[in-house]
Length: 530
Image 1 (cartoon, helix red, strand yellow):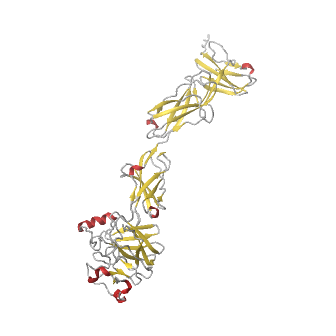
Image 2: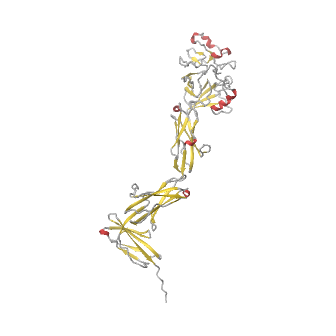
Image 3: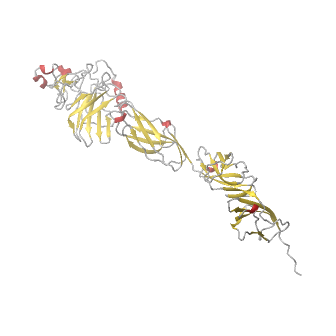
């Protein structure tokens, strides 16, 4: 065991539990029995998708303290000539108690040899002797034939002898492996090489100085980025992840994504799939269409032999899904309302927004109103105004009196915690402000029931009038081209009452003129027959 380290036996089970998920009743037979172990404590599983490390909770350190018996199985489609391993502790800090040590039992695994400590100067026959208890610190596997010459280690790493090719042997090598690229000082990373290369389906074994308390690989962190943080219901959202750490660029495996309803990420709403890591990045996740509400996304990386597992912070990604809304408008003068109005200059007009949507009845927030000069709604005509939205009902705009011209309204709803913003369409309302003119409407007083008046619109200052629109109480009743410069007002069939008749006429130059008269209707008395 380590000469400078001690570890209570009672802590061994806890240490193994920290390394990774135990496999109940599993026995990794890729390793022979060594001291206290009947099989591998850890198994490196190489597949085409990545490399992972599994643990057998029934197997502790083989010498009772910290040394780990490692197996490797090639479940990929290609041979394996080497594999890097790393951790936050001294995986490769070898201290003489390798897998050929017989301190705890009369013999080591098959193939262990006593190695000369003075290299080739000792009798070659010494290397053929089997390891016995008196040679505990001089036993190991002979370097495999494919191991290059002159392999050595820094002074702080204990060796048990040399092979015939003068390579140093730590005693932790397996029968077909050797170690290189061990990080100086920390001994936290190194490369395990295999000769012959490990063919698909094949396995072998070796050992390491101590099992990693935090898992194989170096520490990592996982950050995530949503495609959007606030969307309208029906908009798909994806997540992607970025792994950070010393070995993140070579990380293998995949990242899984989940959507939760709580900031602690305890209540899963939907599993959003997984994405393979490449260059430290993974994603996008599966696209999710979620109901209105607030959601927390989280990503998890299971780790591999070079990178420890990592989970993104739950509250780092909040997605708000809003209920869709639509905003329409209706303009009004108090006497007339409609999507298209023509008014005499000086008339006050206001706009009213109507908000609709699945959750619009409870809508709050505000509506802003703007009047534009152009049909694309890019040139403001007057300062805008705003009104509050209470229980889904929007207040009207401030009344305005624009000068002569043609105008277009837009109303914009701000949205709230559950309702999405929306705006009315430019052009859905047209406001025409006309020049006042006497267009020939009758000035008749009294009852005009069942009457039809001819109109011969006068031409102000010789203007050529070409078309007209006729409104009764704000409702368009007639429009078209003037016939012989004339039209008519028809009050036939109207009930008793007061009616405002408005006539607008457009000139050949596009100017609009307006005239308004008020008429009274009555119901003629019926005469009694004698």
